[in-house]
Length: 366
Image (tube, rainbow, N blue to C red; front, side):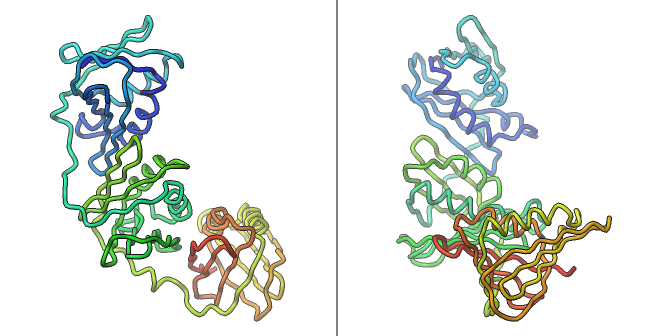
């Protein structure tokens, strides 16, 4: 293997692919990146056995094809440390990779490409194509509600539901839920549900750009996503996602509409004096007014009053203030609509216009 490439061309895919690679690995080859040169196309692959990312670039001068794995972090740090317009020459000498740039020379240890794990090929059940920007919007609007390190491992990820006329994504950690549906024609006969792991969602989000399409292919155990220069593959989580329809509050009769930014700022200020462990605030709803009360074990108190559009019975209900702030920070509309029914029922939050994302936040007993 022997080729020349500019630092700029190599750095971006190397950064993307290195993001997948775990630093602390039981298998040494998993902390490496696989380099494969065929003709003038160089592919870089990183994996942690759950998520795999392949980046492709064209080299300036290809002298000899080949394949090898080298430590991802060290190769990335070397490329970052070189000056911006550097040219890099990479060659193999025995079991070592030689990297030269200007008057710098680095010798890196390698492991054979045959040791690098492959993702199993499998039959695809369904594939669809959509704008990258739209998928990014779906993930940005919902991913914050995924669980982190929950023993119910299927919550540490996101549900993709594909039907003939829509794609729906749902995330929940058991205390709150975020869901958005995109109307689109899909080549599938029956509704399919797949759970992508948390890391897969995070890496997929990093890939997405403002323009261009992405093609998603679903298999029994994997999802594959292709954009111009990258191919992303992730294992699916094996488990049954909770029935989100049972979580969506039905028949809420108290609907208030308020300025999104005002509400977010009021909850943020009140949260400063909320109990640091439980993050609970008391919300009191009355005609044209929403009052937020917070206190903590040091006997400190915060009170905020926000004007809202509401006529009806009074209601007092408790919430984890962080969950409300997360939703209000995600909504892009000027006004938020909040539907409530009683102190023991979940709240339904949504944008008043411009988005069909739905958010459910369970109440807290205070």
